[in-house]
Image (cartoon, rainbow, N blue to C red; front, side, top):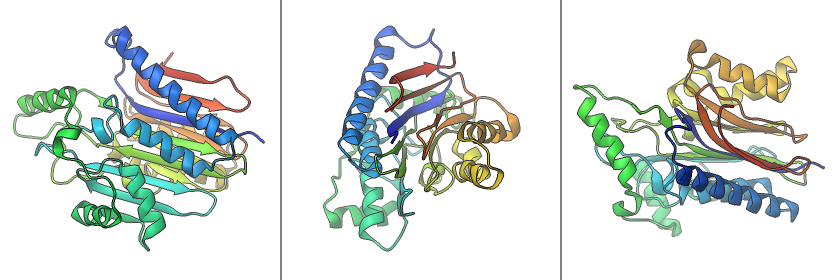
Length: 306
């Protein structure tokens, strides 16, 4: 039985000429460690659901990514985060949207799935639920990073009265998909959204079927300009292409990315795995932080397009 884990740390304008050797090594080292940990857990019969949650938690705890600790700032200088987790074997799912001060939004999303009769909680209600169950709440300064603060200042200086969403073309959403030794699939996604977002904007990372989806056939996590994944219900669309058109995982993934923005480039990408352990990682940006560790393949961490 094949089993394995695929992860992403965001897609966007990621050029080798702009990424220092030291920073590139940091990404390779962390993503590689997460893949190794996940593969070890899967080899010990841990569930796909546990493994994707832990992989995303590890990325949320790193300032390298736009999720959790490294989340971008809104126009109002806050960190508002979204996350979703889905158990493909049962259809169980949980999500949080527009949450602040939550240390690990993906863990809270799982708590929504397992400890409430709801699927999606948002804003202050989600925070109240977190407090009631003893979930870790952090002060604002825990989420502060110079890099994200400077991105916001640049956006504010250049907006000319209108919001510029992620003007640098960088999308650092994180995600994980896994297949375990029992043949069960799971997916998880977490994001800080877009730099300088306004009016409590909510992205695809908290919406079932848009940024995250899993069933008994495949598991999907997306990254990029959320509005495009929302318009296309992209994560579910991939599974539908497999189910109704009998397309392969790779064919379906390529088609989903092709449709983003009506064929425009530099929108984003996705990771996916099916119940046979096949994987797909297409994107239409210059780079996507990504990697895999599948039982019948050599592990790899990749950043650039070629």
